[in-house]
Image (tube, rainbow, N blue to C red):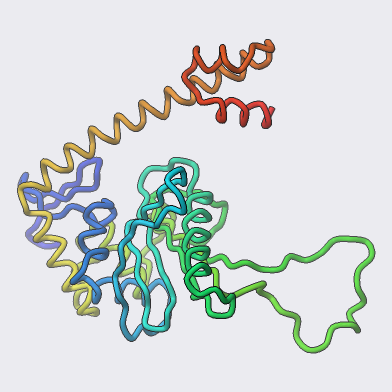
Length: 299
């Protein structure tokens, strides 16, 4: 951009003359404030329409905490959860760090929501469609496209005794159900593209804080123009700068905790090979009995 010089730090924060002008929306706290709180329905609608390639009449932003079935159940929290006007439930998870479990996390969220809807409806035919979206800043699945879409589908059977094709009547069904849908947006792959085009590309440039591309996008899309202004206003707030420093410290502590846990698992595996009893391993490593038993199963 003419006359303006921007610099970015390792967190993707954009500075102009040493002043913060944009905290990227890929920061999950910024993302939630732009798309996941009451009053941001139009922002979310614009983004979802670009991802899902559908027209959304209206939507309602819901509590992003997924209810537990009992006090022992794992708590699930997504960044954004909304119910669309046709009843479809859509969630978005913004994930910058690769914790090597995004596939399992997506599966957990979508199954949790689907199961809770069954309990409410008590009728399989009335269950709402559930769409789980993960925007990730790393490559996880070995696919060439940056926008990856998955459904619960049939696979080709390789058994020797195939049913003859004459038994089939009409077109063969492709999906087991169309009520489960997953979208993975791979920002790492997107960033490698040269001059990507389209409405989704415009939104992703905004999420990444690509200033030049944003300037062009706001000329084409009023929703992006509005979110851009809100993004900059939030970024200029003094408390956000301090908040990001706190987040950086939290991220470092998380990495350390993860490294310690992996080291303890390595120690436990070696002790299991030496036939050390579970109780001794538990005291030495501080892993739970269940975690040790799982390591035994995976040997």
